[in-house]
Image (cartoon, rainbow, N blue to C red; front, side):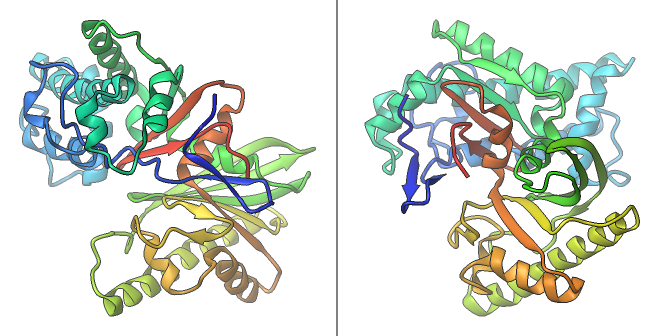
Length: 362
C-alpha cells in the first residue's frame, strides 16, 4: 500500500514522515455519541498523553491512596498501573475508571482515523483524501511507549477494541510490545554498523532521557544495559522570543552533552566504547537536521543547521576520539523493530502521540 506520509529525499533513498502527526487531529465529529461527548471539538494533544493522564490521576489521588508529596509526577502512571494489584476495592475501581476513560478516548481517536468522516477531514486541512484513505486501509497498529506498557497497554487495547465493536467497525489489529518503554533503544541498536563493539544509545524524549549501553557481537545485539534515566530538562516547547530560545538551546545542548559524556564514562569502565552514538529524539529529523518548528528539541536548530554533525564535532573534541552521532526520529526508531509487519503503523504513547512507519528506510 502506498504511504502518502513518506517522501523521498533527493537521490539518497532516505525516506521520512512529513505531516503525519496525530496530535493535531481535531475530533470535530465523534464517531460514537454517549461515551465522552465533552471532548468533541478538541484536538488529540489536549485529550490524550502523559500530561492529561497525570492530571486525572492527581484529581483522584485520595481514592488511589497516592501521596502526591512523595511521588514525582512522571511516576504517577506507574502507580496507576500498580493500583490494579491493590486489595482495596476503591483503589482498584478508581484506577479502572481512569483507565476506561482514556481507553475510550484512544478508541475514539482511532475510530476517527479509521472512519474518516467528512467533518473530521475538513478539520485537518493539511491532510488530503489519500492520507485519510491510508488510515482507513491500515491493518495493524503497534502500540509502544510508556503508556502502552503493562496493565495500561492491555486495558487500553481492550477498551479500544470494544469501542470499535460498538460502532460496528472492523477494528485494527492492535499489537502490544513487552519491552515497550525501551523500544526506541532497541530500534537504534539495529542501526549500529560495527560488527563487534560496545556503543552508547540514547532516547531523548519530552519527559525522560533514556540511556543504554549496547554490546554487539557478530552484528547481533548480545546485551543491553539500561542506566538510570534523566529528566528531560530545558526541553519545553513553549519558549517564545529568539533570545530566550537561543539561551534555552544552549542550556539544553550542555545538558545533553553532559548526559552523553557521563554515559560514555560509565561504558568506558567496561571496555573500549565504539565510535557510533545513536540517538532517538522526539523531533522529526532528516540526516541530522532537526525540525525547527515543532517540539522541545526544535530550539537546538539555533545552534547548527545540522545538529548531528554539531554533536559529533563537539563530542570528538571532548572525548579525544572521532565519534559519529546519528539522530533518528523517535517514532521511526520504534518502528525499526517491526519491519516484517505489512500495512502497519507504530504509535508511541508517551508525553504525546508519536508515529513511525515500519517501511521507512534510513
